[in-house]
Image (cartoon, rainbow, N blue to C red; front, side):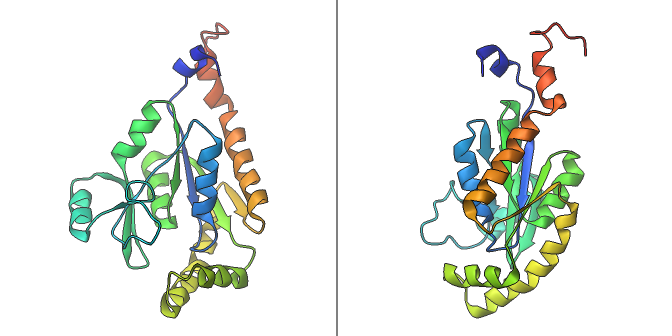
Length: 211
């Protein structure tokens, strides 16, 4: 991309990705942002405990329930929701910081948060990640070895309700083979970046267009 195109790039867009726990959403999103230099992964705030190998400020901003409540009361979140007994939220400041610089923002959030963003922003590309089937989903949850049997059962129960919401998304990607699913996500980002509304506003001066 030329320097003139970079300077005239319109405000960045939103890519919202949801999935039932264990479908591979986080791994796919992490690989996706590594591929696109203009795509930024929004880091959510959460009240859940930090897992082994996770880094504060990279995987999540880990905060206390009291701090989270204060942020809610201050209207700091573009969306927030309680999932599996823990709260997760996306700060407005995070979204606007990257979007004003012309960067697209990738949000790895649950169906409640996605619904709030759809209502608040009235825009965005909504993508739902599915496992190949529920049997494989259970296998992946068990192989993570991060949850006890009771938590896994709760996640499986919630998964059925979450999957029903996939009809409200623009795209559905089945994560049976990781590399194929990642290629599908890349294709969506590339295609959305070529939409007329995204491309032409940045080229009006280059082609002397009056639009």
